[in-house]
Image (cartoon, rainbow over all chains, first blue to last red):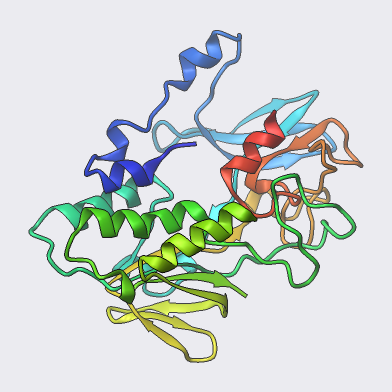
Length: 179
Length: 107
């Protein structure tokens, strides 16, 4: 998992370090990598429809499968938080990490907080009822299941901010856990 | 939980305030963070994680739950379509949505 926060807090553009060459690594195991956008999964026909997206204007393609492993992560809904684009920061991807780095280290930053580190509520589905949580995960019950966030990695961010920027006053900072 | 308690004690000693059972975030402003119910917290820097939402191409599949996350057992296999596996944030059993659990599932 990329350690974007460390690069950001140490004034390095994470995009220059947090990259792995997937194609040759996978080719070594005889796996073909296709960069695309998945448009549909047909679990009856056992096909995946996708748009290769190296350039706009690509045609829709379809692949069939015997086994399908879905590891597409999820959509991080920053677009559902009004004001995030104008006033928010995060370290979940290279673009936002670099945006935070530039905010902290360029243009003579001298504000010093306060800082709030927190998470919007996660809306869990209903299929986990009766299952034990995945080992390393948290106990949850429906419908009260909540993402336990921010996790310790984000709490570390506040400590790093205090250590790195001597003008910070941690006593004004907050870390939030959703209820 | 001992490591969490130790970390909280250390961070609290640095003066970082912890607020548990917070309501959902309604919006960010130049002044800070606003929550459901009207509470606000002053913040110059707002470091935020959002809600996790299932991808549109998966959301309505019959192998998904009510919020579009893929139903599996703890071996990450869908019970009705055993040829389909899901791991990481798109799997329903992955709570919380963190990379460490995704790695465990892959292993």
